[in-house]
Length: 82
Image (cartoon, rainbow, N blue to C red):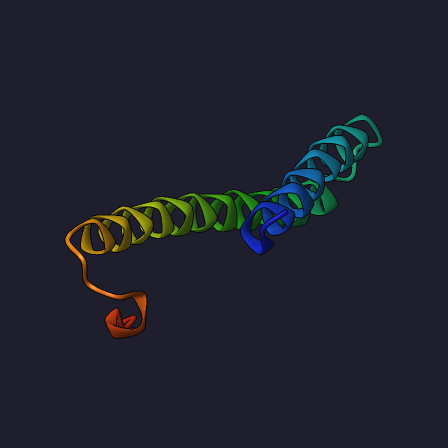
């Protein structure tokens, strides 16, 4: 399992936990805690978006590498530009 997928699973669990904590805080009337947890949820959602973009970028890179290999360019000559 790739590192991106592991991170995505962990972040989804975190987001789910935040949803539960928000609901619990609202039921208990603790609006400040609900607000703090909502911020945590937004951070998790942003991280999930970043991971999704990273997956798309990785897939694009893999496609380019495959096309270069098909054209006979050795993998050793393919450099990642950071």
